[in-house]
Length: 276
Image (cartoon, rainbow, N blue to C red):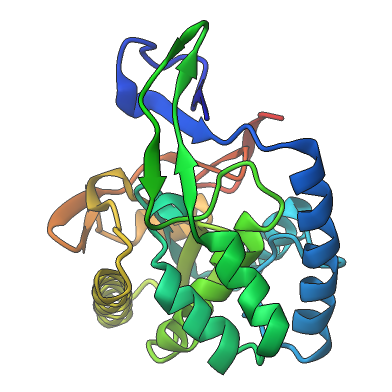
């Protein structure tokens, strides 16, 4: 495994700023690609993934995810509404997936059994890792959970693991858009005080239930790194008095701009810059 700095401007002396990307053999990636093609075809044929999950699916991409989100936000602004957007942050999402839970979902929710399920069990079992920096190497340790970051199958398996989130979010009438472990919740509403109060309650209750689900499924929602923004036209925003929302145990201040899938957008829905 090779540690990669998450962002170029982060402190390289802090271990938490690195992403553990697995250095997988070429042959392993070829096998994974074949399995991923067959698995993706099966998921798409029977509509087994969340319809708003855009990661590693035919005719879906970062662009389609961003286009849908921006279109919804702009349409709400044209209707003289404002939209509360929450960008959830997960801590080490790929690294803490519970193998037994994932295998159960592959069998019970995706319909994979027999030798195919045995292959996935073999794929997840008996993995080890060590960290290499230049010529230095850590001790080798067993991997008891998670899927390898940098693998072909990792994002698809994560999408299957979290597919139950969609119906849970829908219960609160909150919209969503997901790309692997990036999840955006958004709720559009009128600018009167009653609508504002109802919207905040709906979003906060939704975030609370999402966090509870993640705890039950051994994932961790990072409250403090979650971002939120209220967006709309300048006139509509001037009518709403809201500066923060509650996400789990943290009070999240509303930002004037956020970064989503490499795209920076401000609360007036203007693109600030794009990062490839």
